[in-house]
Length: 340
Image (spheres, rainbow, N blue to C red):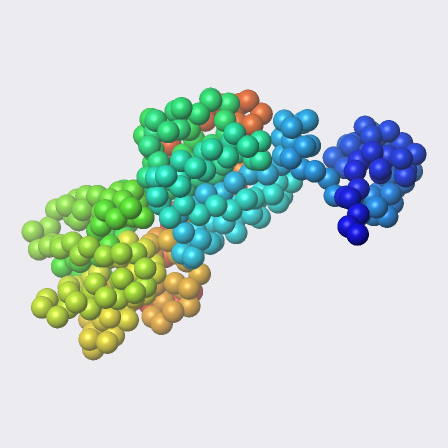
């Protein structure tokens, strides 16, 4: 026969204290004597008591649980962002609920519905399809921090890379390495990549035009942002095109697929073609050749995101709608640099 779960009242009776005292111990309040604290902790252990987080949240107005919503946890970039957010949240006494949206508008809207469940205190949201009006419909006191693609007019803190500056850094590097013909791979408006893809494409085009060189030419190659799609798109393109001087890929995993397609065609990287990625995922520095890429400071992104979320929860709303997180151009073997 199953025993009912122990309640706070059961713990209070076992320890000979009030339920409020048990609550104070569970919530680690400082104004409980060490002797009383130990009695309560002993009773909790003996009874196997597990606090009801949702009930506590209803009483205190906070659950200490936040959500992180990203398009695809399987992509290395989002996995590394998730790890950074988990680390920062844990340091602030928070638990993270992971959510995957597949960059679908309906799923992104469903994430916002979590606020009506009293389950979470706020959301760090890598939104792709969500519209500014979806966010404006939320109460102003609802904590949401956007990361990645900028949602103009959303009236929420938005942390992202300075895409134009980063793209210019990368283009200038390739130009200095002798590249004059460029292939922009990943130029696509599929749901998963519509936001970051179009902004990165615009940044690269602006950077190429900014070179002011009549020698410079470029072509767009639509491609999904996965290993296989990067491989397939470039392999097919190479069947009736001469290799460019440089292939600029919109993310690292696509670049890995592209490098394999070049290798299968007998084209050497970087001797024949320079290749770059974006995101500085861990594997980019260990592949052969190691990949030149744009790296966003993921730990700093997580630190700022959690800090803004906590500030919003505390009623502080003095934040910029768009704030750039530091980035770095990491020059590696795929453009003639050195392994880290």
